[in-house]
Length: 206
Image 1: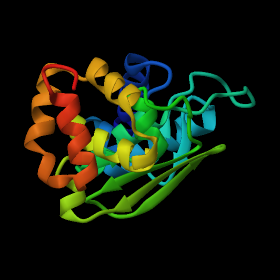
Image 2: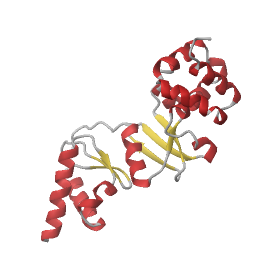
Image 3: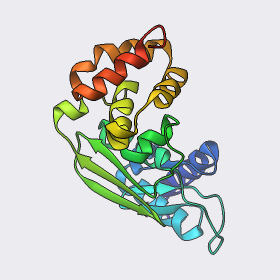
């Protein structure tokens, strides 16, 4: 192994120690440590040593345990964050995942779908499936905002299952600035969801 290769290996190992157990990353997160080839070689060695686990093509985590140990899978949030950093895409949580994030459902889905303005892909981590589904510009208009999460959560719940209790939960969990943004984003929501958003943003209970 040449001096440069050893140097990149050392820097990659140090970065992994600094970020700690559970870090989900792509080679792009290590691009400042060496050439693409050198980083890939270092990751191969770390993988063989059991300090790095390959989750999918171009996606890794640092379980922090040796080979053969039982390791938990990373969270969907950490995986999505790594993909976003690598591809510079926007994502919008949908379905039960969005509802759970807002406290509107106790269901923790094993199949999570994110709308994206990037390419469609699916990542499987044990029983968990994370799907990136390419969406229209309109559906991505509220990505990264509370209003986008609310729209998707309410869409999943359905009009017949949204009552005063759900409005109360949203009023409690959303910040004042989020409620103001709901009113700005009414045009992106179906009519019935827009009405719910108005109630959530109201200064007083209706």
